[in-house]
Image: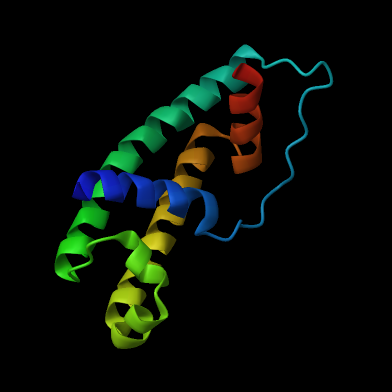
Length: 124
């Protein structure tokens, strides 16, 4: 159950919990096709992200155990936020750590987040 909640929480974190960092705007190729080079970079980033997600899930589980959080939805409850500022500080650090890890995966693969998302949509 905790793992399922952690996975859901990570998905929410990835989609809505982080501010987009400034980066160079990606311009898709004029023909709209994914080149082998872009596909290879996408695969490299995707593999790194898969490993990072698995690692981050353990951080979320540890966070939930440490702060006795039954559901990540508690982190949006104003009473919980007011009563547990140390938990909220730790959660914000986790969010920042994830965003840095995510951006590092893109950077190491030679992509921006926009490029990664475009390639994923183009391949899907």
